[in-house]
Image 1 (cartoon, rainbow, N blue to C red):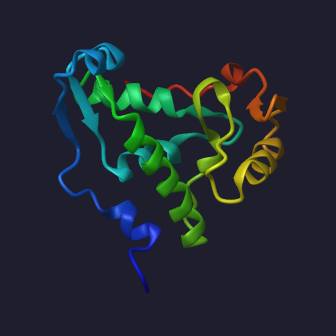
Image 2: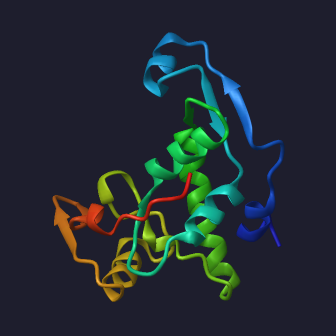
Length: 154
């Protein structure tokens, strides 16, 4: 098999979690501080698994939760997006012990085109759980997603 499976990538924490010190003034302003957390893929998977049926969460919310938990100012958005996607792909790859990745939305309740089966697959899962999906331009959102938002315990 060429390369690692998604489940191998999910289990690979390397030296994470780690906090990087940012010095570039533009980046400091953008991230709201100098401490940027890089959390391992499993940290995202663990949170995504907690979201019960009928509820949703956003990647931004997960990032701020992880940053607080680790004493950082923010969490790297690039690795967060990659690791959330790895958690989703690994879930499908396993075929059992599912991570309900479709309940993790992008900013503002937007559906994630990078998930297995794309927007259409996520839309089917969410509608089955009672959510209404609306289209704005080329993008899709869970209507009134804040009404079914899942809060993590601090």
